[in-house]
Length: 93
Image 1: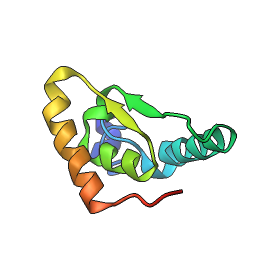
Image 2 (image 1 turned 180 degrees about the vertical axis):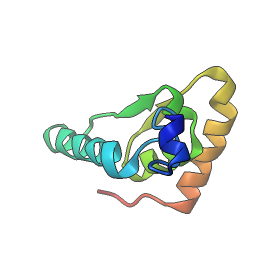
Image 3 (image 1 turned 90 degrees about the vertical axis):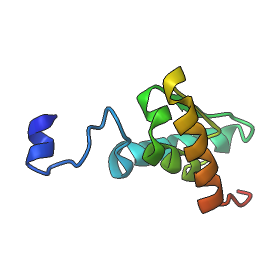
Image 4 (image 1 turned 120 degrees about the vertical axis):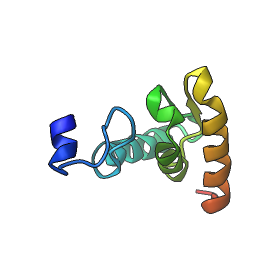
């Protein structure tokens, strides 16, 4: 990863923050297809992405229901989730 970041191929490690155009597109597609079949489907993400503010904003916009992260990142995740909800209010699907 350091070489890709140094050469500006990527700006952050995909293990730290979600790649919105790539993996993010797949997340949105999976959520959409899953909820077409089962509208009450609950979706979330866990791991390092669950504690990354930029990723949390993306997951909110992609209509995921929750994030899970390590205990030491919970305060940051809660603030980021609240900011995402204020910044991008959800409208019914």
